[in-house]
Length: 111
Length: 118
Image (tube, rainbow over all chains, first blue to last red):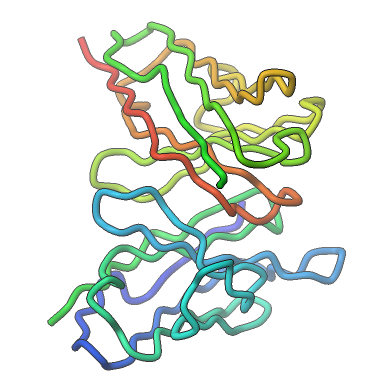
């Protein structure tokens, strides 16, 4: 099974400042079809998860451009260029290269 | 607008059974793989089961294999999760989610709470 490890687990940030979350997989997420199936999801308090990014860096419909994803192989990053109050919540990476596995989640809160 | 509405959750005793449903609308249900993901109280997300567009292929997490069965009725635009031999550790909010191409979890329902307790 592929294990997904996120760091940090908690990220206090100042409004308007950037935030960054790392996600590392226990093995390469490059699929035999050449794609890398790494997604990022956001879960606001009391809400279901919401897809932000898929295939490393593709923003889903309606996602603000302050969210961006990058990485390759086993190391991936989600960046928020300028944190807004509505960005508070827990962020999960998820791999779908070999079945599906989530990271533990990173809580983003305002300082 | 894509909508996924889960139902069927509730309180059940250990060893009991429950059947969850997920009614889909706003998209062509039969063209999407579907999945169930759960979240124990205060915990992270755990993938449970997934099913292909036609229902002929299913995958289950080790933690539920042999106890849970995922199925779908494309004529009713509905996804199901039959849960048997329930344990306390199955207590969670269960979400249904679309799986575009088996790999993109693009839409999620609001979830239904399952509590296993005596």
